[in-house]
Image (cartoon, rainbow, N blue to C red; front, side, top):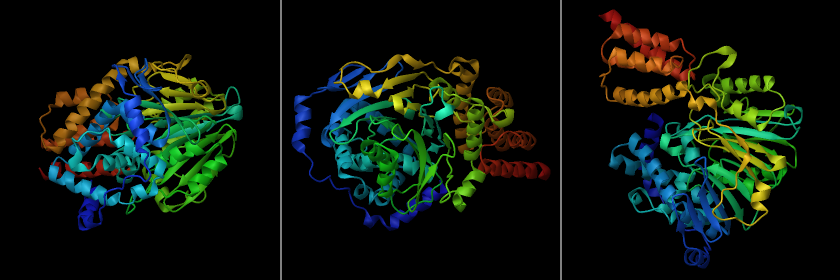
Length: 554
């Protein structure tokens, strides 16, 4: 939290520069009123309907939202149909803020900082998307107005992905994705898969929304994210162009620009091939570093577009496959000092090599085989990682997994938990080329991919208990309350014995109990496990030295 606190303190000196975002120009209020009057909301527990548009909860627990029209209409319909879910999602964002900063006075200071930091946010977002965001924001309630207007808060929530991986304290971002074609797939066609590992807390991913959008201008598209989100994190349009986002290592810029999800939305809505996508990206001003995997049915291949606030590079595949984790690979950015440090210190390159080895041994991929790769929890060279290790492709934090077959216009979307639940398939030709059929989900049951057997195992049941206890024990550490017995700690470790975290937590609690021999023992055991980053390794070594020193002093 140190860097975040420094930025907040700096912002207080500059708060006079804050301004409220302006309402978008040329809003067509008549269109909005017509939606509200002529297409009132009809609602049940599993279906919301407004005119021809609707949102339905499918049998796997995901919401499918079908909406069409002008920007004002799309924003109004999304707000009308998903109002309850959107308000719940704001509560989740707010609860994360309250968890990090319990003081209401400090919360207001942070929001003043965000107001200053986001002072240019609406200037760099196209007017049509500002209209959608503004009309959507009208469906928030007044509970959190002390943190900003509904319009401000909705804008900020669209920058959550960007702010999350810039500040690093607000989210875990560690996505893995790959594209294969030619001899690497069973039918020779393009196949793309990715995990979106964006995590705030367990509640954040409970309500996934699959957006099927037919805008008046541009191409219809599908995307997967959370309630109240008009941007794109994973998606494909009717032309068979896909885009997914993988965060790169960013410095902290002095102001927010265009959120990367809004950039991806523009690409998906207006590009039919890779060249058109790159042309759009070259015009954009972003405030984070990102690797965008873009595939195209027209081009029958995929590329990586590596983009920073100052540079952009297009990385072509050397053969008929392309991999991406969270570091840059191209000539322009690959040798950047920040990127080299990220490769050395983080788990990105480890996951990249694991992807390579799986693709080397699993040729002629199908969607089912792609799903098994996304769900893989093993380490390299038979290393035991433990469930939840960030070095695994599936580190148990995914918001969703998604698989595309662009040439067939098929998309497969996972259900909870993460990428481990069953995948439901959708045919964009059937969905977008025919009128909406209200009160019906549009998934294709015959193409479904079964849930990962891990979900029904004792190992996963133990992991869920381990994760709950980890949160509880870390809270005790924060409060310097060591009231956990040695027996309880050993039972906790035994729930997930290959993961470093249990041993580290035990070491911290023993240290607080002034049991320095056991603290040293468990720190040593933690250091012998596969550690996900250089930062964690340094922290464990630091704590180990402290415990050893205290023991010798006694």
